[in-house]
Amino acid sequence: MKRFETLDAEVLGASVDSTWSHKAYAEKMGIKYSLLADFNPRGAMADKYGVYLADKGITGRAVIIVNKHGKVAWVKNYDIPVVPDVTEVASALQQVKTVSA
Amino acid sequence: MAIAVGQTAPDFSLKDQYDKEVKLSDFKGKKNVVLVFLSARLEPYLYQGARFAS
Image (cartoon, rainbow over all chains, first blue to last red):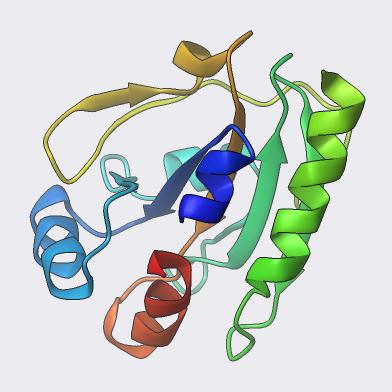
């Protein structure tokens, strides 16, 4: 995550799990960035971004970069077994940073 | 359909694992924000978390 900090970005994770399960998860995994509990009403925030899978009751895997001006600057959806490529996200972020600076 | 590039990002206010309210608008004009949507339940996605934690 240091990599993202040097890119002057805030990382926010989000899932439909509760605050308590996020706390346990973050401790177990050593996650320092914010994990947002989008569970009341379930998936409401993900739904606004079009990434809530209502039929499954879960959030689809996606990474969305919002620039400093509050606009969506980069969107990538992943099929559930695919793990987001951190390098790709970092390079997209670098680009967003350059464009929106 | 996921939101499209160029659209205004919808604001939200949600609690994080420290019980702190986090608003998207808090970062406006200050920082770019990377929203990482993790699929619940958490167990199958531990690897993703691990990668993002490092």
